[in-house]
Every structure is written in C-alpha cells, then in structure tokens.
Length: 376
Image 1 (cartoon, rainbow, N blue to C red):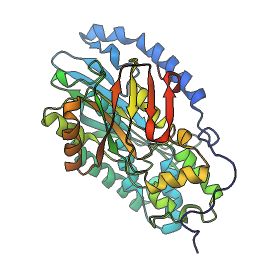
Image 2: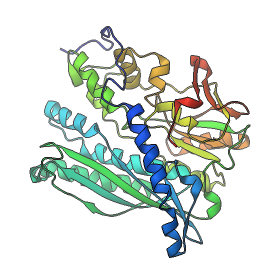
Image 3: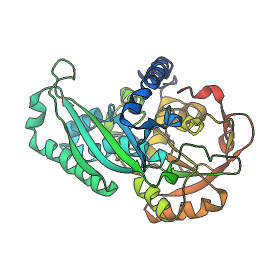
Image 4: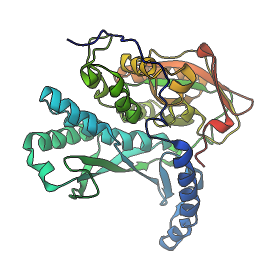
C-alpha cells in the first residue's frame, strides 16, 4: 500500500544546500573560470575571428566568424540518471529514452538563449565500467531517445565519446553530457540583452516538471517518504515517475518566433538557481511578475515535503516556468500563441521596469535583489 497523496511532511526544512549542492561554494569557481577564460579570447584573432564579449557569463558562448555568429555550449545531465536506475529496480522499465531528452535539453535550451539555431549535438556517455553497455535494452533506449530529441530540435547528432571510467564513475552508473553548436544567422537574431529595456513583457514558457535541476534535493527527500519513489502524488503519478518526466525542448518555440518575425530582446533558461535566473542580465532593471504559472504536482510535493517557503522553493526549482522570453510588449500575446501552437503552455507573466536590479514576484510577496545571483 502506498502513502496518501500528501503525507504529512516531517519537521525541519530541507534546503538544496543540505541536499549536497551549495552554490556559495560552486559559483566563485565559475566566476574565476570565466575570468581566466576571458583572457584567452585573443587567440581567436589569429584565425581572423573574435568573441562577442557580451556573451561571457551568458548561457552560451558566441564567436563572430564574419557572415554569422557561432554559438556553443556543453552541459551535463546531473544526477537524474540515478532516479532512472532506482525506478528501473522498482518497475523493471527503462527510462533512458526520457533521460536522453533531458540531456539534450540541458544543452539546447541554453544554446537558444542567445538566438542560435541548434546545428550539431555531440554525446558524452561515461560509464562506471564496460558492463553498463551490456544491458542492450537500456543502451538502445538511450540511443533511441537521443535521436528522437535531435529530430524534434532539427539538429544533427555528430558523434560522441563512450568511455568506461571505473574508479571515477561509480560502478553500474553513467554520467551523461551533451555539447551543442549553433548558428546565429542572420546576425540580427543575436539575443544578448542589448535591446532589453523597460516596457518589455516577460513571457514564461511552462515546464514539464522538475526538468533536470533540483534532483539532489528530490532524491534526498526520498529518505523522508515511507514508500520512497513509489509514493503517490495528488495527480496519481508515483513520485519517481513524475521526477522522470522529460525536460521540455524549447527550440521549436524560438525557431517559430523567428519565423514569425519576433526576435526576443533577451532569454533565460530557468534551471539551477530557479527564478533567480530572471536576474541574469547585468542591466539595472526591475522585473515585476504579476502572474505565476500553475506549479506542477511534483514540485508542489517537493516544496511541501522539504518544508520550504515560497522564497526558498522559487530560488531553487523552476516551479512551473522552464524558460523566459523578454519581448516587446506588442509581441507578447503573439509569443504566447506561437508557443501554444508548438504544444507548450505560456503566459504573459509580467514586465520590465526602470528601477533597481530586482525580481518582484508580487502574487507571492517575494523579492530577489541584485545579490541573489552572482554568476559574473
């Protein structure tokens, strides 16, 4: 027998930091790496190219190669594969087709923030030993899911690497990552925030669930659930099934927008750091949210079971919004309609205003200030 849809959460808040992810320790390394990396940009000159300096600190790196821009990104899946392995032990089903889409989405959804069309994806599948690949059903599911996601995004799968890293990756586990290269062509499609301004509308695209961020917290919560991953949510799904809903691929929306003549002034992929990612651009502007999307059942469950208030939850999880588009006010409603035509729910959630750098989520009484996100 499984637990009720909303078991009483144990006393004590469980934060993302307590689950093993401390951005206060991680982010300084990112900043130091960015500064060191910036000093290497001059090497492009020997090839006749140059970097687009404003892309430093954004979700993808952009190089000016003359007639167009070249954008690139590398991202890893994180710990979501561990949930797939645990659920396989419970149900006997393979979830690696969905896991493949998650991995590609991590890269593609970052790449498109700068206005790029995804062109080529490369795979990195590092197993804890050669035995991982002996499970033909699981391996084929990974291949099939990877190809399906590439087809959905209209991107070529160029190749990849499949190392067996015993002693580095745990036995029986796999570390999945993807790199993606794309083109910004014509150059007017570049979206690095130079046109971001007061008066712009903020359009939020719906998430499918937890996506691939916050899984350390989600897995830690299993220790509090009497039935673990088999615990039922209010919508009837098991906790494990809900966690494994594949990440939404947003490139069909951005491509459809460009085809319709809409160029976003800025974009943000809402992943790690949750809604604080809306503060990613360095401009001093206020982002006022007056409508929030429906929170997926699995995220509401995580918030409840972790004992988190809204400020903590929205600073960690996507809470129903997987991608943000900052567009001219007159394009806002059409942007929503285009997203919905691609099968992705969307809403005009707020606007950009003059004022101090801050995010105000008014329906929830949340304010994140300039110090809430330090990625540069």
